[in-house]
Image (tube, rainbow, N blue to C red; front, side, top):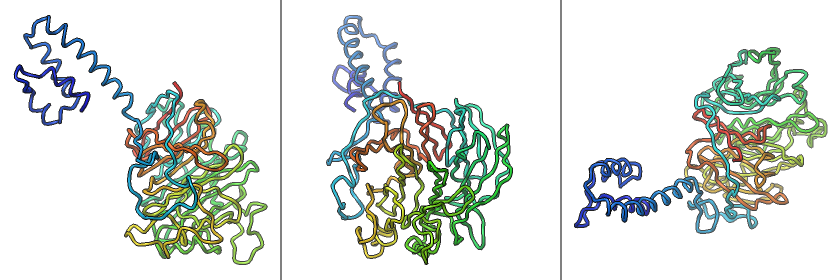
Length: 454
């Protein structure tokens, strides 16, 4: 309203009252509406030239300068009283285990960057990766994938995928290229597969045709049993390591009856798994040969890890959704228990405590960072692109948070946080560190964003 006041001067009568059309007044003096009526007012008033030259021009100049500043700051992030990006109160009175575990100081990008929407009609995208030539391969949770040109304008559908269960959070989920894709055209993908008396997270592989219009030789190589008749918490991110083995994240399927599986090691729910390209336990897995443990398990005790990525140093990280509060970033280490089901910084949606209401327990790992209230973190990537100050940062697509989160880390500790594109009001499902040095993101509304250095 501080800038609108300048424009209101144009509508002031001699007695100080305002001569405003009803529409402008009823919209709380919105700048765009005021500007519209100013143009009409200006061309129809009989003010003399002297008054225009000595009052209107200087005032108009000041207004334009200030409104320009407002426009440039339209997407500036808010900060709380503690200097963090969070302005809301937490859901609980839980205290962090160490300084900097939550509500770290806010940082702001100094480098100018462009935000472009390359496509607004991608359906229901869930995962995005690059082909070696720069084109995009984007999954659609309804059960297929799309090949999208580098400019976002040309979209072609790939046919031949197995049936998915698209209810709720299910469908065609993540995708990864075989490390030898250039020679074998193989891809790996995760999806919610109708199975048994319900559904489950499955991983399959298949060969793309040369024209990228069909997939053949499809084979399910892994199923995260047991199946369950639900529609939530599939986890389902994929990441190949330098040895060509595949990390797979799975959720614990949300309901209290399945939550207990996250702490049990005789099943695949609420786990980080590591398998070969044939779906077998990866060599060196921590529980191979141990009684009571599935050999594919790499780590356990996670809730719904919808984001997982390997940083340039080879460190595996995940982000997972908490209940009311307790979204987490975890550094995933072999054989470790990340606590879900027993410990959390969140509470039940009902407001009750989760379990015993504890945040620490011997034998469980603490999150590197957590959020309360939640941001609903989804896909993640480690940035290595053209914006120098972002290099090495963890970039997170946020759903309920409706922004892209930038996490600055040093020595595996979070030292800064920024909320990007919050003005877009989009649920960012996945983010991509593009091979061209730009950052890309897909949203639940079907948009493809490009964020590039100016």
